[in-house]
Length: 309
Image 1 (cartoon, one colour):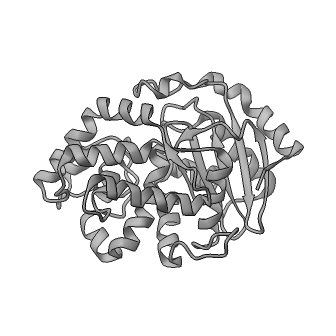
Image 2 (cartoon, helix red, strand yellow):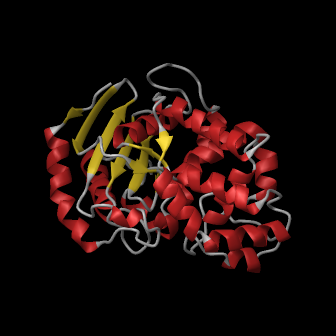
Image 3 (cartoon, helix red, strand yellow):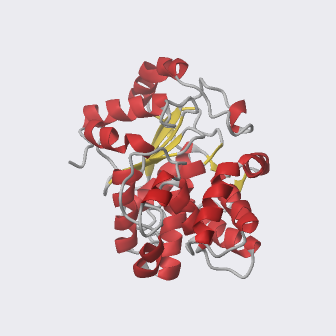
């Protein structure tokens, strides 16, 4: 279903576009460094199957850390809550998303939550399958169902670029393997994880996935239950407490909705039982969040009183 351009949303988007100049794209992954810092788009998908948008919503971007939420939902369905949280914690961290400090200083030595890289890598290692290709394909099929778009794929250039530069993530994996959190071959896991992060879509796809979570796991277009309601609740809770890296507390106070960002500049937001939000703005702040996307969400939340608190 095409999104209709909404003039009020266009005005809000244009009012924050200037903030893109205050950030920078994620060039530590070479392929992401090619993004246009000035790009900005938003789509809002209502649970009764209407969609409105502003900006270039058809522009593709990779999910990056937004995929952590989707992989978590998938693995919770594969294994159940008890098995997953035996290996991964539930607590927020004030450290950067790629830090391994808490792995070394906490006992037992397990990731604090599934939204930091260590936790996300542990989650991805739990995807069931007889091979790395089967594991990734299963996750990709799940994301196609969530977006109701069987054309969803991954960007090979970004996946390759991430795989070649993921030295810190490899170090995190080997540390966790030493402590029994990860049992897989690390290079196989890195291939799955970098492909997972490189799954690409546009803002409307992302907004539609957000709407699935807004409806506690039921797809608004098909009426099919894709995620159990208790799992959707767990994922949304992590998005509130840990979804915006180490800016999650400030985000909860200023905006107050479940959200997850990625260093490509994507943000998936959820207003429970109302709509999902998909944003793309690759110019990032110092925490790794879309600088104009955050400002846009802040204005949307204030104008329409979206906060769940």
